[in-house]
Image 1 (spheres, rainbow, N blue to C red):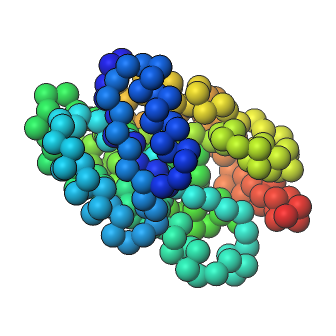
Image 2 (tube, helix red, strand yellow):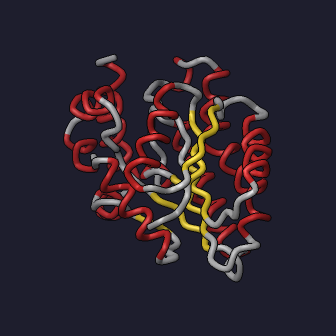
Length: 238
């Protein structure tokens, strides 16, 4: 679509390789900033870098996050702090810091990546699920505040085949997990299409709708029982 890109990710060879590949294939201006967004001052560093680029910003895509499957007391507390920080706090801070630049543009967008876990509690993913509920609520509220200035959308993907570990885990979880698995290219395409259309919520694939209907038909207790059994398989097989 001709947009230049400011990419932010971990500072390793993959980031620079990605920058070069996109710039070469699409002949656009691509700039990269390597940082660990789990650091408490990372959002401020990103904001400062963006200011230094001195280019108009019309789209912010918050797509950083981390997940897990574990009993609540089986993971260290500092790990849960990292989950909440990456999934929720960094998203909030980057939105706050970049928003003044977005509001200068005639057509501006924020796309926050939530999760299907934004739609209901997820046993053995309690902190992850709670952090993604934050993403949903924040995005909906901000959308109403900014409806005359910036279009805010939130996406609720299910599982995404981003690496071999996730593919293996999906098979261990069983049919419920495999039902929602999608390739990243398809998710990205649907999310961007929904964002440019100004959709409030974006449901990549069929899984979010199917899961919601299962919950409505089976009720809360039975749905939680099914989720418990499926996620527990992931713990047993770790």
